Image 1 (cartoon, rainbow, N blue to C red):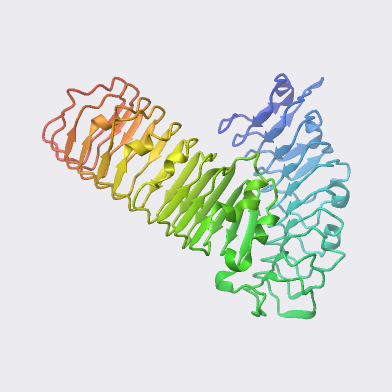
Image 2: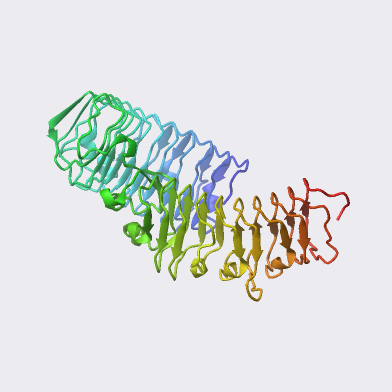
Length: 513
């Protein structure tokens, strides 16, 4: 990784001198030139290349011929207007050309037999890539949103037999043909929102699980005789002719579904009880993050997302729930999720099964009043954030049951008590502790003795008037006691040899500690 530097040019011959290199990240530099000096320059193991957020204006695809194992190529967020050469790769599955300045795209000399994802959104294309049918015959996911397409070329997508997910949002399409010649049999998601369509008809839909989005167009007429009875998942609010019928989702709670190039799939307004889990089957397998906005359920368990989880057992899977009436959640035994994030929910109860892979748990703005009783089962957890909630007391013996925990954020709760119930237990890997914005009136520094790796303690913005015990921490570099009610501070028995920052502003001191 070499990021956020002034690097302007990269000679791939130098990269070839690293025969075991598998991952190359050169994002967010100033690279305007990518080249290879003459001579043999094989990079046989290089699988992932990130070159986004640079200054490339053109790219010669021949440069990647020597990367025999290349699986992922990200050229997004550059200034590329010209692509030359041919991209030939038997292993490439993901190509991102988004956020560039491409006016045309010729793939006739390319060979990508195993391509799965093609992302070309936010460019200046007026026509589909030449030879898209031949070059991208095995593609499952295509994103062309925010280009300048005007012409109806849907018949070309009809030849892509494996295409399941197609996004053509924010173009200038006034008419599209949606029938058996243009809709592949594996299609599960089609988005045409924010175009200039004036008429809607869709005579062929492969199954009743297909989701179609034509919101925010100019549709004034619908040919009901040419709308397939399989079309049961359609959103078309924001059109002059928007008509509610039993299979249309109401605009206030319309199910929306979008997968972006960052491998995040987002669902809005999902009601599992009414709509089932059909939508989870249509998330491309390469996508590892499921983000739910306004989940319409008061209780749920990870079994609800079982199909999403089990298809990604070899990946680091993330589940996010944002703004929901969800009150209870259960993470089942042997869960594969690595990250779970709940924000702005009514969550008052959450429990965890055994043998979870969970490493990062974030719960913000919930109704939780205590640490979850079964949190000690999360033996792999290394980051825990539980903030903006109603927690009043914290038993550090519970925290000690998390042997890999390195980061603990309990800020912005109502904590007035921090304690050990039994014999103090070792918390060997904990590095960062955030307890700011709580209601602590006193603090016993002996509580931190067992945190042998502790580097940062934040006790700011409490009501602390008394500090007792001795703070002994050989690794501590940062201590924040600001915005409390301290009038005295006796640190004579403390031992913090590596302290670098002591912050104690906005207290009531009349004398130095």
